[in-house]
Length: 331
Picture 1 (spheres, rainbow, N blue to C red):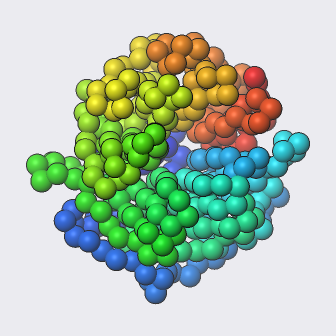
Picture 2: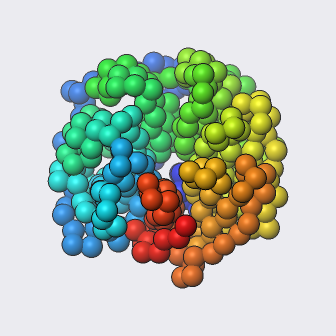
């Protein structure tokens, strides 16, 4: 198997799963209710919480919200470069992804099928779903306050229509698929188009807000960890061994962007100035000024392994990694 988790990379393991649970049968529809929630411990308040591994970060209005190891959720408000822990997070499992639909309402997912939600910008979180035997979730996306998707290991794709209180398992595999591919990152385009960066060089594409999905083979054999849709409508995915692929036809076909790089890439965003930025292992930073068609390599001075990047409102690019919040920014 080319990759087991989003953010598990050849040179360093950033996410570990201790228990391999049996995957849901592809054709089975499984309902999940609050009655099956496993009550766990709350995240511990740590003086050095900003040094915990961060696996994802988003903007919630003007605030940054980052998630990672041991249920740590970090917040940073405008005018303050420092990060503080959220007040209440009812889990100590690793959190792998976070998504907000506005400045207040958001969701986070992680190991043991954990789903959390917040209605106050990430200060306080409620537990919606968790279970020792549930597959880990690596990505979450919401269309609005009620409907959304979470996805993870072994083609696990869950859909909710009530804000995450209940989830149904969706079948994304075909009858002739030999394996159930891990799903690493859901990202959206315009006109109801959704993408999932996945294992074995596959990108799943939906033209109708996730009602149906089609697997598109890019010609690459490794895993894609992250993706984004550009302002010009192009789509991009990045992954193992410096792989960057771009689509100019809404995911119907993909072309490799040549880059002399062996380190895996973990995140990709488009900046306010329309440049495209990707980061990864060994301190890799690569930036494109031509819509993702070519990249210039940069490098973090300490060669820290990078897992996520976000642009602040003032144009600073804030980096995150295995060592938490990276105290080095640049424009």
